[in-house]
Length: 427
Image (cartoon, rainbow, N blue to C red; front, top):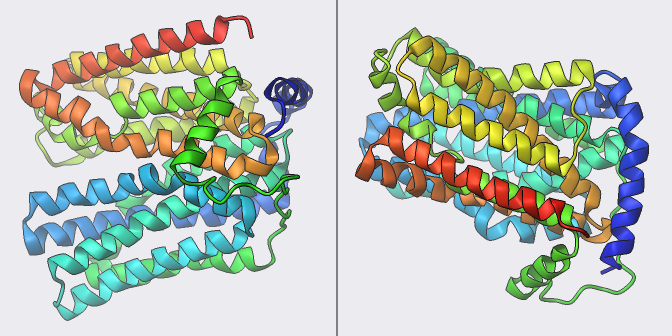
């Protein structure tokens, strides 16, 4: 690995050079034709991912009525990020990222069509559901590092933050539209046919990637050791990361935000809706569910339209602190309208600090091992979400869900203050 201080100085100079033009150009990444195509096809694929969740989870509930299977669905979605992110990041370092993404899309397509066929034939068994849920989780973790490397190749350093922010916006747009489109497919064609049709949603991205622009991976001067993607390799990455305050603080920020809050709030939303007087169904409950995604989409559009908030570690940490306040406020209020506003604000803040952190990790990672560093970031930001069910859900069973969210937000805020102090230390 190259000298961390020398690499850090070079990257800092690049960041300084890139910041001015990136702020002056609105929707900077969309000025690249290749990224525009990838943005549209990826948004479709992300919507397909959420359509599958909506329909398959609904039918699983109708067929099995198994809370345990529902819990396994959450674990199978996030635990692969914990165990395989660095491995698949190493694959992205060594092989054609386009083909890796195509493989992940084919897995998504196969899983969605398999759900549809099994539901259509009425032969679905628990073991089949378990296998499909695991394959879906593996497809997600395979997609992540390769996608992040590809957008870096498509737009370069200058517009990387714009590309990351727009990619995050398209993901949240999929979260926002997926339930509506999935519900429409179920009503129009039935759940089985809807899932089979959904398999075709991934096809535009698969086809575009055949001839997409591509930059071969940069090879290290010395070949990496055979164990560089195992436990020893992960330890080596962590040791090398300590000398770079930006890499360490941003990967740590992603990890603590996922560990303490992460996805733990979403499964508890019915209880919050009930306490706010909306019940567990209806338009008001749907608005509460979609407010976070709507805030993220609005944030991406506003920030890109104005070229605001260039990436910096301190800005990312401060925005995460504000996110903690919005989450704690949501848990504490008893007024429905205020709760919706706070959910919109939290979505805006979450997208902003998360896209900053990802941009900085990609910018400061040495090119030959960038995929592995992105894998380590994905392990932190996605893999640790599996434990947010403990920090929010299990603690909520002991002290009440409102108090558990407040306590988790306070613990995250304390961690942010520690990271802020770390970034202020002399380098």
